[in-house]
Image (spheres, rainbow, N blue to C red):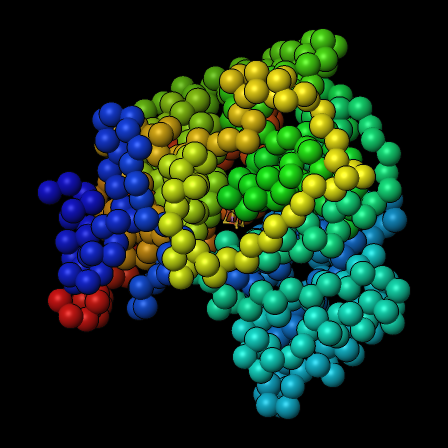
Length: 529
Ligand code: CFM
């Protein structure tokens, strides 16, 4: 039996039937392989997923530094999204940066019984008086949806009263199957209410960086390189971003998409509404970064920009090549397993490959099928109760702001050379025999690690320690533990150094986990086995 079979064999028939669709072994032929994704978790299974509120507030909205984001709900949800994601931000010219604060209405039992609207009004008042933010966002948590506080009416009232945009997001944690639903709620609202409201003039080589959240300073490293090449960054969605910058996103001539999972639909909407083309980029790994820079230069087609891009690439490479080569000699032949949210498990495989590390298992927490199989399959995804739960909006062509940078003919020609409107799925880039798992749960994590014994397991805070106590090194690809940046040229060296340090410090192998010394409870999955 292969490792997939050995792990799934322990399930009851009902659970097996479900999970076998979420796990696949990469075939030798590069045919399309279908995986089940973006579906609800089986009750009782310990998933590593987050919730809708986490995706909306924690992931997309929190990095906007000039916005005060108020969590309407009991304190736990707000506290959990306080600083744990490491999306860094520096105050802009107006000095406003509230991302280090944790703002919450701190609902108590009495508020749940009698309603929390009064408390929310009071919180908005305090936020205006203390912080004077450019805008205020209100994010609701589960109990708010259950008791029915009308956060949208309160937002409209506060907007009038305080003379600044106040927006409400009904992102109760229970909505949908994962944090992905929350990304949609946040991004859709930015699309509807913020983008296009600014009055900046068009700049040369103007771009938006979409789906980059400045984890551990990645966005800063990417911006540094882009600015060296000569790009004008209109806005970043949303790492170290701001409400004011996003208002002008419609003035860019190109959108580059880093994390396609969280924002591909906005890239499409920007194209429909404002005519802005988008390309998929990946700034993880030096080869990927070089490709992204060359694709961008080709899009603008300016000889000076193309030449400067090559100069920057040569210069950046000369700075890091020697060090990277050293780490390559240390890491060659090692194996890795990756389990991250919705795009990193793919992005980091390129950097690992450069370093000589083979990926033997990769999975996403909440990706959709296109992230695994490629964008071309989107139209074939059948709607079901779970996918219908995701909020969708439609936008139409804006006659005043619509502007095409390329003619249709140029566009079609370029499409053959650069990833315009497209991203490949992770499965295609993996080696035959490697394992792909959607929504890898706690049990499967332990079992696959025991069977495959990778040299390193890249994951997150929920599964890191169980791996380490079992003797396998783990680094967090969400927060980079306390390190970073990992993107771009210098980031690649930081990553290679951290991985080398970890692998050559095999401390976890000396640990005897508690379950080897004391008897533990034994249970079965599914209940009807
Ligand atoms: Fe995109 Fe992200 Fe990711 Fe994501 Fe995330 Fe994150 Fe992630 Mo953690 S937006 S899908 S919801 S790249 S917080 S910055 S690391 S799970 S792989």
